[in-house]
Length: 102
Image (cartoon, rainbow, N blue to C red):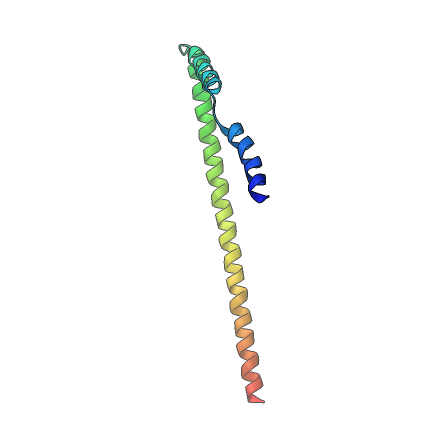
């Protein structure tokens, strides 16, 4: 019973995920459309590219700045946790030594 169920599910899946010749043909025509849209760059497109590059550079600098701020915040939080841990350890040691003296 399980075998038939497995075969029943496997056969449609094989048909569904197989690539036919028509799929490759449509892919090639899509590639041809993309190559046909290539146009010589004009001065306007060059200035647009330069503006885009400047924007990307600014975005990258802002991202690096935010990343450094986040790292500094995480480092500060880690130091606070370490400090609290050391403080609690000192309190534990002091408590245990007082208990031994009584």
